[in-house]
Image 1 (cartoon, rainbow, N blue to C red):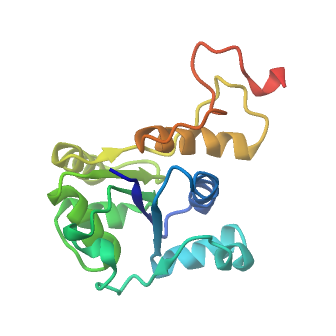
Image 2: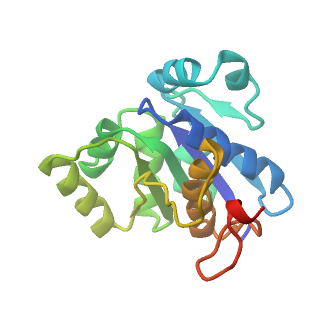
Amino acid sequence: MEKRIVVAITGASGALYARRLLEHLDRMRDRVAEVAVVLSPQAADVWCQELDEESLRQIPFPRYAPTDFSAPFASGSSQYTDMVIIPCSMGTLGRIASGTSNDLITRSADVMLKERRRLILVPRDTPLNAIHLRNMLTLTEAGAIVLPACPSFYHRPRSVEALIDSIVHRVLDLLGLPDPGAFRWGSSHTEEAE
């Protein structure tokens, strides 16, 4: 089945993660049939604060309004294969865990769970309270993958981009789209060696 991916961006801090994922997917157009993007209203505000408005306008894929329930991926019949929510706010995570579909992001996540398709949530909040942890457990038990934005350091990153990529490469691996340039444990490749 061809990869058809929804990338949702919420208002948690971490717009860099979303931008890097979209950049990687843009370079993988030969391996991905379709990418659709939806931002919450807060996500657009955070993106402009952490990055800039120009890069928001330059997202290279079709964007859907968070209130657009006619978007194709709001229905299981559309055959979207994967969804990534990056970064995923704890509010969004909680609404998905409780089955509350109050916007296109939560509705699409609900579709992924009910259709038994891949749903990857990348929360970036810290510290976590008991409600956050219970919601993450609920979603994991429902079939979602919770991938906290906790960068690794064993590849000796020398830039913020390298830290961001340590998470984005994990997302791409889970999507079945491994990046040949990603650090792999046991390899001799480190940024310091470059």
